[in-house]
Length: 252
Image 1 (cartoon, rainbow, N blue to C red):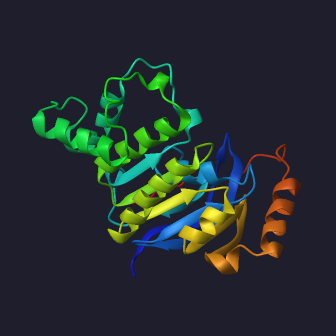
Image 2: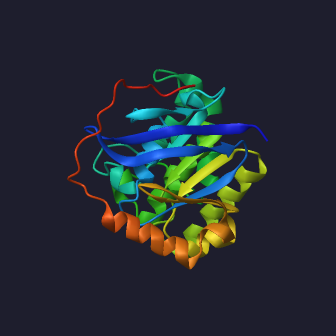
């Protein structure tokens, strides 16, 4: 199967201090891949590189025939400004920007799509609620509705099931499985190994660098998980910044 993503000796970081080191590998089109690792392993940094928020310090991320409009990104809820004065309906509607543009009209077909997306995640009747009034589970359902509207070929989910109730997790996992059956490529950063083992056939275990990548049962071994923890604990955050001859760009 053709690769949807390729990591070519990619290093990502901030202020030239690396957070993900020399990652090489590829993600097949239609893959359902979990990214796991201890806190500080570089999972969110890797996702920011994939979606174009963060340029590589070295190496490249190749997305084949995709452009950024073909990628849907669900950030951690802590990255969402819940005080922003916007309704659930309007925030979910931003998922249509790819098709309508930032200044596109919100006609009847668009409003119907938004209503269908809200129904799909169980938020009927929440259209006019300010996003700041939502619970954690409701917020995550809303963000999944926005991803639904984006109709993207590559979906990147950063801690999508963190701090939400079991019923919400089950409902949203059903959406993830639906995307997989639709041959979309789905990457998810996760902490719950039970969810990973039950739902994700492939896993990348990250600890600033790659520990293991392959079939989930072969990756999530006790030895590999201990090695990931050891690698993260041994990492020196005060290490010197990378010296790079040039600044490669994200390839497409």
